[in-house]
Amino acid sequence: MKIIDFLKDYQMNTLINCIREQGPISRVELSRRLGIPQPTVTRMTEKLIQEQLVIENGLGNSSGGRRPVLLSINSTCFYSIGVAIGRSAVKMAITDLCGNMISYQTKETSNQESIIDIIDYIKDHIEKILVEEEIEPSKLLGIGVGIPGPINESSEGFITIPNFYDVRNVPLRRILQNAFSLPVILDVNANVAALAERWFGRGVRCNNFVYIMADAGIGSGIIINGELYRGGTGESGFIGHSTVDMFGEQCHCGNFGCLETFVSTTKVVMNVQKQLVMKGLKNSGENLTFDDIVHFLQIGSSITQNVVEEAGKFLGVGVANVISFFDPEMIIVGGRLVELGDLFIDSLRKVVQSHVIGYGGKSTPIIVSDFTDGVVLGAAALVIIEAFTYCMDNSKVYEN
Image (cartoon, rainbow, N blue to C red; front, side, top):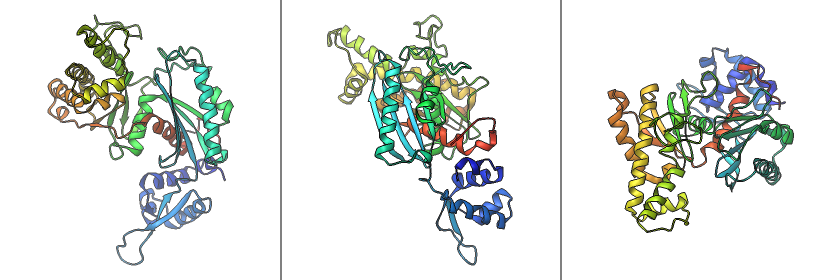
């Protein structure tokens, strides 16, 4: 039986999601939490076990009498494909329902490459992974894709993204759907990284937090009451284009003095290179990489330390604004800038302490993500969440 046949039934959907989110869990506890009679829960779970969607997973504690059998989702009954298309790399993975990566591929790119060539790479390698891992197409829930925003997808399905492989009017969703006959979901990279934290990472037990994507661009994914907040038009979280100095440098978005013009991996590299050239330590023709910056920091370069500390201060201004707006339980920082270590994060925290007015806001935990591939994992999670919440919003067509 297809997963969609179970998820069309509201009561079954609720039961499955309770097992997925709260498992391992006993039938008695399921009955109590959902208000469904225990014989009904027993009948429903037996059906799910027969279809291998749910498994019995050990014994729980007893309050007297026989210890209850615990139920969990069978993590390998279905799989999801996550793809992250960044400005400097393409990453993809197949995960099980618990977010375990079964296979992973990555390719470095440059912004001069053609988006069509990148899409062809994605198609070829997904096909290769499925063959290598011997995964049946019927066990795939879909493909999630995390990309920089705003996506600017038209009603006809064409996307246009600024400063991103010169993408203009590309039907990315349709191309991938036609290639694999699977549902394809697009979302902003910071949003899907926030979902990865919510389901598998530092935000598992936190219902209200903001994820800060600190990378080639600066973005945020906002979790409110355990759900991703996308805003009225799906364009929330673009803090990288909040104005820090209205008379500052022009951003690639066309505005002046955006946060991204002060802090990003690109800006850090440019600033270190500029300082080294001014001091005669590098030729202007020698281009540095972000890996070079991390190395310079590790060997104690004072020039690099000053640039990194300044970058942390500017991101701290953006984070302080986020805390003042949303009063989150915590801030999770991810992306390549966290590779700059304690100097960067401590500089950020100091600015938050000095700029946030409320005592509670000043003490907001600011923690570093454990994930190096949060966008890939979050893109896969996006598909799993969409599949398992099908009947909550059956206006969305989801076939598998």
